[in-house]
Amino acid sequence: MSFTRLTLRSVTRARPVLASSSRQTWVFRANYSAAAAGLSKETIQTRVLDVLKGFEKVDAAKLTTSSSFTDHLGLDSLDAVEVVMAVEEEFAIEIPDAEADEIKTVQQAIDYIAKTPEAQ
Amino acid sequence: MATPPARKAILDLYASTLRTAKSFSSYNFRTYFVRRTEDTFRGIQAEQDPIKLSHAYNEAMKELSVLRRCAVMNQLYGGARLAVEEQSEVRT
Image (cartoon, rainbow over all chains, first blue to last red; front, side, top):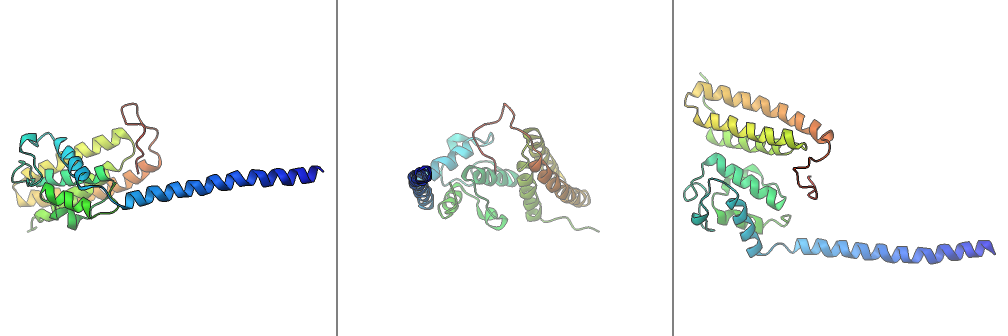
């Protein structure tokens, strides 16, 4: 008697656990696919511009997507490295040195983030 | 006669040093090394003498390897977050 009750209990208990775990994997998958779809252009643009506004040397009035770090925003080469690193931190990615050197304007930074699926 | 390091080499070194400095998990070490790295490289930027420049470059190179080891140790034994830090964010 007690044995059957035990087995019954274990069976009934097993079901909801299974159900919840399958639901959890579904949620994870949903999150993953949402991240894989990438960020919208507008989100990337506002976030990159916000990062740049955080720099003391950058004049917010001159800040547009087409501005070059060194030519329009009055930053030197060391500041440009810092900007790229701040962008990396904002989107939780790591840009290799060779490609980081290529990023010289705000637009190039936005384009790089747009074509990087890991950015979040 | 030492040839001065290339501009690109200095910028790459700056990027790696700054990245290492930012990887410290204790707030005090992290902010200190970020500030120190910025100061060191501002000094290198202002340096005109090619011999002093390559000296400073080599020194910064040596410091980077030390800093990398320290950063790893600090990531292992970093301790809890300070009250001034954001609590919810997970550092990787």
